[in-house]
Image (cartoon, rainbow, N blue to C red):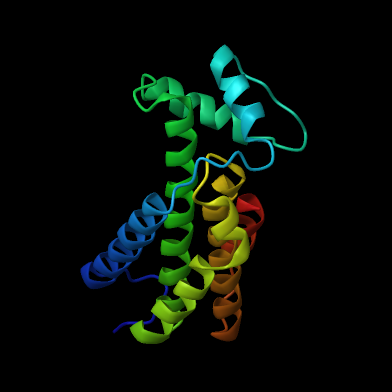
Amino acid sequence: MNTRFGSFGPRLWGEVAIVVVVVGATYTWLLSPIMVDDVQRYIDELGTNRFYWDIGHVWMQPLALVVYRLSGGTLGIIGTLEALSVASVAIGCGVFYDTLRRCGHDATKSVAATALVAVSFNLLSLGPTAHIKLMVLPALALALRHAVLWEKQIENGRTSSFHAIASGAWL
């Protein structure tokens, strides 16, 4: 396996796809109708089909509304929120797995670490619900990934601010 961050072969694509599908399927199976935290607020807001914005949730409601509108509401409001939550957990775990593999960790250790993330309290308590706070997980995983890339470049004597800026941008 090539552990350079710049390479992304078909095998690693396949591994990441498997992680995303398995985590997504697991969280779909675990879906719960429990109204956690401010789920009812998002249901009400999407029901008005209007954008709401607040400083504490900068992108969540507007992005959820865009997805709801683009899907034509085929999943319904709750289904759209659940799909966003499940997809966010699955994609975030996929990015995390990919980052580990690109750091040179073998598949077994990477699967184990990703599984531990996938069953962490925060993901298990919010991921299988219509609560959309975990929409931030892929961005946080990408911020971590770019921070690690930046550090790896420095270790290898290469300097570039791209990954530092990308890490900050994803945050």
